[in-house]
Image (cartoon, rainbow over all chains, first blue to last red; front, side):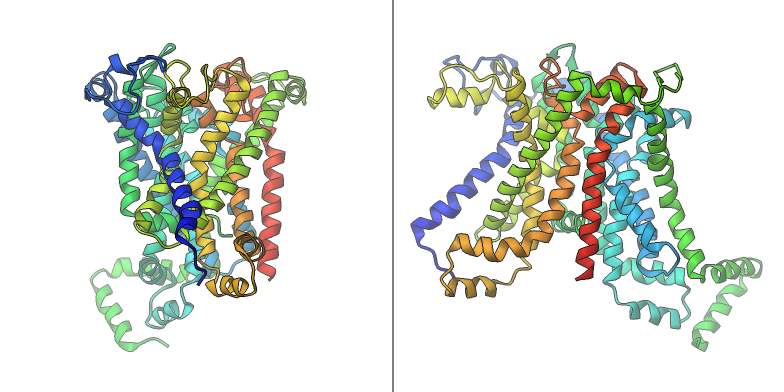
Length: 283
Length: 319
């Protein structure tokens, strides 16, 4: 063991760790404080003597009320949830099938296809949004949830395929062969043997895909125009800034409420999320 | 060889629907061919990728060569859009900003992420919950957390100014987002804040594969902490580091949402990235051809990075 002295541990561990924790979490604290601060206190300049920026003595729910009453926030939340779930599901199914084919089946061009899928994973949304907006319009998908449910898989499928391909490769071939000897078809062995064994991998891919779709912004910004059809990030940007005026209380309340569902999902599946995260970069 | 019992059960089950049986067995027999099954399994995913990635990419190439705008198909103009962008001072600045933003954000993310990973690799109390909460910036939608940062940088109500003023560091407020240079550094800071956990957690996963014996052996040989990091940890972590850096470079280089919320490209177009400027030209002004050309300027850089990544992966497989 490498032994450290007590005082040294403060310098090399406790203090840096505390700084990291404050740096990481302060913006969330700030979001929460702002969301419950009454307007009268919110707009006090930083030089005023009476400013107490780090807490408030009159916490209020007025911003949450205003947010839920005057905007379509509940719709945004529901849309985001629905779109994230459907696009995750589509991507998982496509990713499981494609991942299995690439990991287990021998066919011409499998290596090329694997590389091609990996490369599309690295094509950012910002490269394609202009023509894609026209394609969406031509397919009559503009301003419907399907515009996002079908385009989000473009960055989720490559990731799911890649992650699951790696996972399937770690499952011993014998498992499948036993099932085949027992008379299972190839397809049956895949669905009844390989997929159930791979549930941890599938969960990782699913959780990671879910948070990615919750975070997506540019497609949602361009493809959705009606206020009730927007997702949380887009709704907050476009409806809570009127002209040049930022409704900071409501903005922060919206940011907080919009973050909670995805943070909850994350907290239940941290370990799977971490596997998805680290798996996403393994070639 | 088929197990007779199982085969018998199959027959018994299929007696109920003799008409269906023929179709199903033909389908299953057909799917026994690896080639056909692979095709069937790959079609749904490939269809989505072809329609929504490959096709728009070809269209982007075509758009960039025409004068198309909203409601006007335009005509072929050759490389005029690219030439115009090349001579556009706002675009030149946006390109410079993108390189600057990518470079510094990646440097900070790597340095701080590595440091955080080394800290998290030790054993301490509440380790699980601290590690989990460290990832929050990466989970929460960028747009929402960028708003919190924008509010913290607010010129009049900034908590940062309050803190620095009351701790005696400054006597007048700092122009966080109202000055181009400051604003770009602020964007680097926020991007670092958001991306650092990704680096930390991935590098941590790499660290956990390094055997502690190596460190002990080095320590016995008299290596101090820095030497142990530089000569043991860093070389062993290099493959993971390279992959993480490549991913981060791609994400940062093509970033849109952070700048869109934090500065909107302002003040006076001084903080545009390629993506936000392409959005302003292509969507806000409706000049689709020019916007497509602008965003295609990202392609050579991204292509280079991906090519590097693929070559690197091939080399790793060879070992």
